[in-house]
Length: 479
Image (cartoon, rainbow, N blue to C red; front, side, top):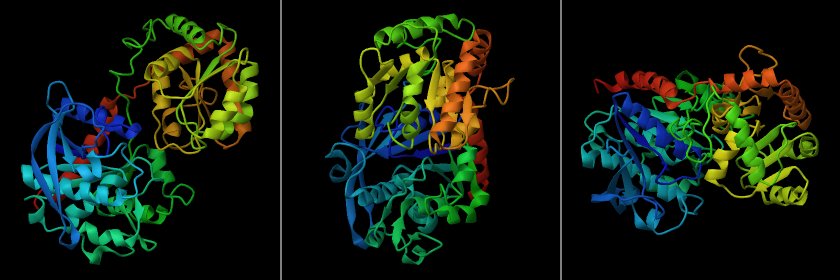
């Protein structure tokens, strides 16, 4: 198949979160499986790497406005088999720092979506599937469905729209709609209108041939009022075309057997080396070497969504019979509270920034990984932790429920410790069960080995995406 990925960020060109990691990895797995893959993203001023100018890209928007842009090309892989097209428009993308959170994001990404469709015509690309990601690309399915076929390509491709986090929808005022150039006949309850406003993510979901999200459980959760963020009714209406596929992780980057950030590499066959890495981490973070207690870790955003409001009440208990290392940034109130606790002899080490090298060391050197999220579409932290034999402590939600089996409930297949109620007491219980398992060295060793045996590479997830793409290709094969 010929597949075009459209996304607002792609690793290593530009990244703010897990979306970039997905778009930087899944296309590689597809290409290695024999598919032809292209990627398109905006050309931000901060984009990394060299890119070749292909030529101008004039984009006709609504109200007779023509935006003057340009198209560049780079490659995702060293073999130059996966082109990455970069849509350039200096006022919207190149002349500012950062990727999002600007007052004109509605105009910026409406232009980007229309430019992607124009790019197909300009380059005579004819993908079988256009795979769009999150609200920034939500208008692409609408353009492909609502504009005359002659304005896009000779054969309209099948369209997949992936929701990575439903919380972010791209909701803007009605005045944006005229700029898009989409027909006003589509601006209604069943189309692009959303409580009097204009919703980019809703557009993607309504007009795509298939909607998917990043775990089976999250696909169910977003159809409920609790996690539907106002779109649960629409998603229930389109439930027949909605499914979930768990993300993978790049096993070339996250591989304890050849991780360049570690002083010693290890595998499930020689987990004794993991203890050396624990000692190295304890020394580097000034916690002090102590094998009698587990070393708990947290890597991520210090926010309530990631469960910090559960961690803070039980932190004194964690520190009484354990050590804790925290890496990340987030809510300044949590920064302050952690700094007040941190100090000599506290058994707590905090690093309030993101440090790629230290992250690898933490995943490898800690015993248990805290991820008690209030909601989690998929989650990558628990997948990385499993890869490094660091047992996750998670709340059963979204991708966490799909990827971590409780070691007490399933003695044969358990890979971590899970709880359901979103309360500090429920997290405390999971921590105590983890401590009990840690005190049984034979059982703990078996759990670590079993966790490391789990398969969450993109090779596995890619097969599910192949099946999803095949569902949409026949829809337009004769168009």
